[in-house]
Image 1: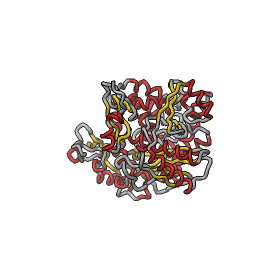
Image 2 (image 1 turned 120 degrees about the horizontal axis):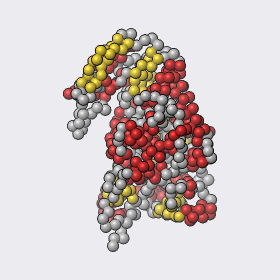
Image 3 (image 1 turned 45 degrees about the vertical axis):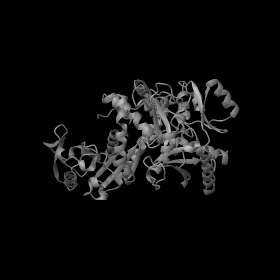
Image 4 (image 1 turned 60 degrees about the vertical axis):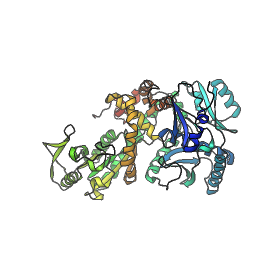
Length: 533
């Protein structure tokens, strides 16, 4: 019988490659301490993969939290959100100084060089109750309230322990590259990019995105709902309706502010909206339209999808397939000619693109822009000035929207913005497009690649950013998604991701659909919206 860990069995390969951080057994993520069974299908996980990167980030956060506990044991450290190849963190009860960060950084380096084992300890809930009463700590205590979780786990490294959601590196030596730099009132913990795992790239952070995240974080702090524990507490105390109304009121206020900004910019005639998948662009555009009407401006939509080049002129991607996402797939000359004609008071003959035959068709539909009308355009390239190169800047107003999650599981475990969008997408795909959760997971990496290439690089070009996340949304979406995830078994490579999300959803209390207003952005995903899509 084999009693060797994966780290022992593949010691030579792990050492030679230098970027192996975990493994999968039958498509389930495991640490390198996993003892494989006879018929297990073992695959080594590299830090350049999605799962490997998550584990690396988790590991470096763990090392940082251990270093803080040794250097500043009284520090209330919080991990807030991810920026470009960095995690923004704060210390709630102490001033962040250069001296502090240098001391912590030196300690982190020392911990990494010692290559100290990180051990996962699992306890029954009774054992955990006793442990927490003795230690008087809140680290990982959220697990005790999780009715669907039978055991409580903590990661120990020497005498230090903490809870981190997901698999951890088996020792501190697996996370060698990092940097801590001051950033506003907190600091950035920087780590390598996915594509360059052995070095830190030049820092580039999104200041507008950061400001938007901070604004929402501050509001949630005022409401005293910045963690899942506090969110669940509000729900179990019977405050679901108030919680939903507060979140929806925040959305309405921000949409109204954006509409006011557009109207105050007297020359604006084109509103351009872009955001990654499942941000809720369609509902946002409709609600923005209502607010614009209240300000005396009538929104008129024009679809970029009707301006594709002829199929024979469509660029090909690296695999030789049609690349409909690239900017060159759009007939930019015709699109800009039509926009200029409309802005100058002229009339255009509107094209309709026939996707089956790959050509534009004209059905006699015309368009002319009145003085009190404004064009509203939604599409992946809307923040890229090349899409509307011939339109003067003062006539354009760009809006970037995304579900920028600021709610954390606890003070060390953040909720990924990408996960929030993926959860929305799986629910919507199943409800309205007939796709299984498995199908959505299979295409998700491709969707992310398109966003990384065509949307995220231009987000700082936006005049306004709108955060479409709703603090309560996962509490509503979980009952739709959990049965769909249960259908995915370990014969599929997507099993690891489905299991990770399934376990994550267990942390949230339920909120009934009846509390969700008919004009809510969430209705775009669960149905029952007052808007037509």
